[in-house]
Length: 167
Image (cartoon, rainbow, N blue to C red; front, side):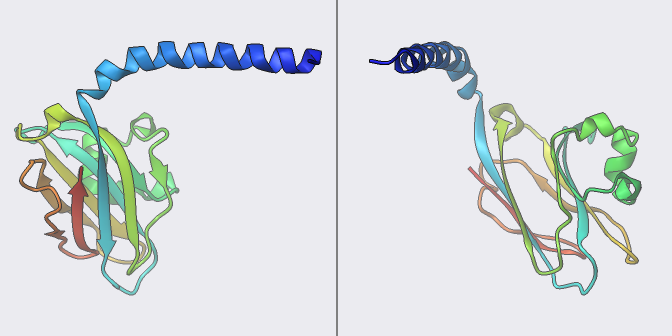
């Protein structure tokens, strides 16, 4: 056996041990969250790609947090007006949760781990939408997060044809 093979074996054992410890720490947390797929289908509205902000509010309408922002230029975020007002335009709200804008007739599909406590407790998922040189659409979609709502399409008002969430 060469020295390199021994090092690789040692590294592999260390990696497996670290993985076992990490898994033991995270498994209890997984009981309190689940992967949820959010699917937004866009209308063929005939314009540039839309910026979208997906965020959650509590039963009283208070902003709880951002889930995803589609669109990469921060100077246009102010057009996602309900979301922008709720976050005060703070870029820390979206670090690591952004992607490209979504074109007319296209689909945005993302899977996130959402806390079980968000479901059937009065929380709502909002989507603000805006497209360049077109009207802004704050709260284009508002859907209560409920077990009964899983897989049920909710129509948008302007840019979004429909939105669904699946677990």
